[in-house]
Image (cartoon, rainbow, N blue to C red; front, top):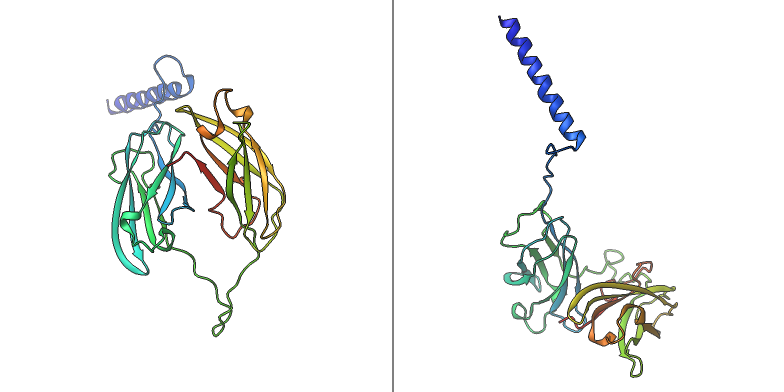
Length: 277
């Protein structure tokens, strides 16, 4: 009797296993395996300091998941000012983000800092979805920390010679829109570094036209530039815009050395923003 029961149990296990394998491999009817990774995944992909406002930065929040993420809060926490530990906080709104989409946020820390203190001289932390309202596939990649400007290296114990490695430093210093062609602008690029910069490229990325989100991009050539010199480059966006839309009226960013082929002393000042608060 016991032998019969054992044989019956083995037959049942084999039958269930066969059905499971069939369901996974056939893809027929209702026997489909459910995906378990359908969830948003918010991440602070990058941030840049604002050249025209020493107490502000722009933060790019991206949804890497395969489901849209609801509106949530980004928390800025200042941890140190002039080497003194503090705990000053401010929250900012992150809008709804569709799958694989991102958004630039303007983060102004003026209310947290003394007038003479720049945010890039502090120690701070950024945390997206700080109140944990979004259920994510990965919860451990929501924050980034900044430890302040790196200290200069010193040669020898008793020496005060600061190491200054030779490097270029390209920056977009000025933009002028054409008065005769509303798709054209002239861009002045300055090399503030102590080394010549080889030829590279601009990337023009238009993000909004007439209030509608778009994703239109084009590359432009950037010629070689000697140290402490500047050059004017013309950018024609005719191929990216409707006939009745001017480049000046759109939301865009212009990035120099977008392929990142040049070793620069400052990699955070290569971007110009238009109509981004």
